[in-house]
Image 1: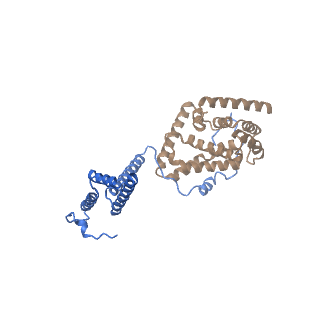
Image 2: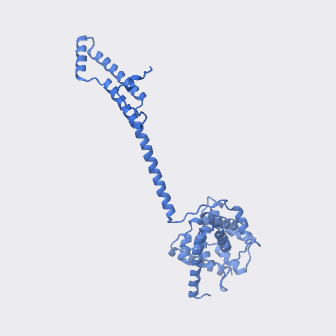
Image 3: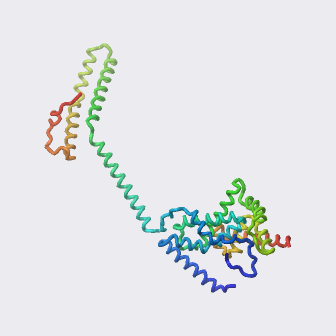
Length: 161
Length: 192
């Protein structure tokens, strides 16, 4: 308690005897076991920690992007197969629509199909060859196949149904 | 009474002591903490006792104040006065305890209700008749006026320090203190 002047009226409160002597002891019992870590204000450590966290985040993001972009450029055999099935399905639907459109007139239908064949170049085998070559090129780039690749590489393998 | 010059030197000494404490904090937290406890336990106890009246409540608030100080010691800035920071935590702890007593009521209502019963029933009250009368008059004040009066009159803090503790403007504090003094004088004149 602060020393008060004689002209001043004091407050009438008093503490029980020995209260202040045991104060620290009782406080120790109530105190949390672990003290919080010291964090100084405006410290260089804190700024470094923020910078480090930002750099780690950036690194993680670029790494994730790298993996993501790799998966996109390397088509899996299953994906190629699915594309083929989809193409066949769309062709059959197109044919069905043509038959419905032209009805029973067989001559007109045949003329239309002949026109279509002349107009559109056939793309299916080219796509297959290009995909195979692309895969082979990429495998070579990755160092998975060290030998020189020729166009007939995939002919050596038996494709299972 | 101290001369203005010596008072200034004492304040400067206190500030430099606090600066030393803050620097020592980084080296030995526990030692510094118990140094603070030893230095301020009585002042904190009597400050919260003035607000809460009952010894048991004051003991709870005082202990909680030092637990908070222990937890927040790392956030203490050496440039601000240590005792202002401690008083602010102590005041908040006392007000929190009051709020817990009657959650539905305003702080002034809780304070008024508790003071009437606590003061007459408290076992740890001593002093002369005049001291008791003054305390009765203080206990009848609205909580804010009571807090300002205790910090100014008993703790001898200046308005700037009280403004930091209570987060109130100096002008408002001066008005509160003036009203408090008037009410106390009226009460004492009537009761004598």
